[in-house]
Length: 434
Image: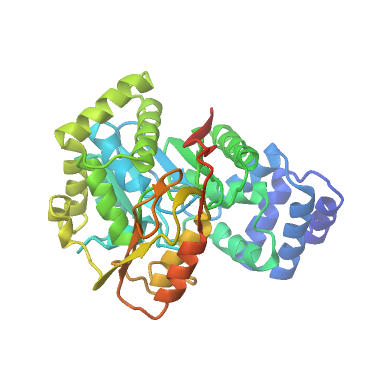
């Protein structure tokens, strides 16, 4: 078998066999097939696509390139949750404790984020002492004891994806449904959970701008999961405004704690509950989402979900007192209000640019070596459809380094359109894919 023949086959729209896909994945990871040939193949895939079987074979070959996590030592059905990313998406910190308090098991491996804010791991590391580095024995022990643990991915989890993604990033081949789906699902399958719930974002702050494109990606990932023996469910959800009000690592932890305390309402809470209910049903804890919702609301009201979050923090070396006293989290030196320059209704938000505002403040990274300031970011005071009066506060900025402050404020203001039309055509959850 030769890589040049595989490139030619896909260039002319042929269907690659499982053996051909396995051959080029193994060769690329081993270093026997060079970047320039894989670049040519990626471009051929970008133009001609892959069908469901090819995409599944690609995903499973990527899984086989590294470690597979064995979670069988943890009792019960393990259900994982993955979001395709967005602004103020703090669902993992809420969903995990909700599911655990309601009787489920959440053993989750997460990655670090590039972009406007850090990933889930960066948010958790803003909690004093919290360690995302755990041995597999410790990981399993924590899940057994409190029902939830979130740790960093192992160094050899899907190395093929690390190499392929880096190459896609510099060859203009990131935006292909099969390659995106394979990247996401290979990590989910390798992470060892029995079932998977996906949160696929759409809108101005998402990779997939249209509902139809997001649904196509969701459908493809659900099919891959099911073909790989992992029952998978997807929600297509809105990212035309930040999901929560807090944008920034410690600020997002604060909002998650407030939701678990029962002190905060909004889209972030509503979506977290929907995801948790689906996980509880897939995990066999409840037979209906109505029963699961009743239990989830009860564990918020009783404080049990908050206690589970605190226990996870304690077991992973962190200061569990933060769940009772959020002032223990990092805080910025300067608190600055950004005010509206006109009156009207917020009719549109450029959520991607709102995310970049947080990056300018120091809440995110553009390359892996960048450091993150956990204290900085901002808290939205107005959302889509809200009426605003000139001079009213749109957001409260939490700032340490003022070097990029003026640029951040300008970017923020340009990202919020204040007009007269009050008809906002959006939903939080557009559709579900079984």
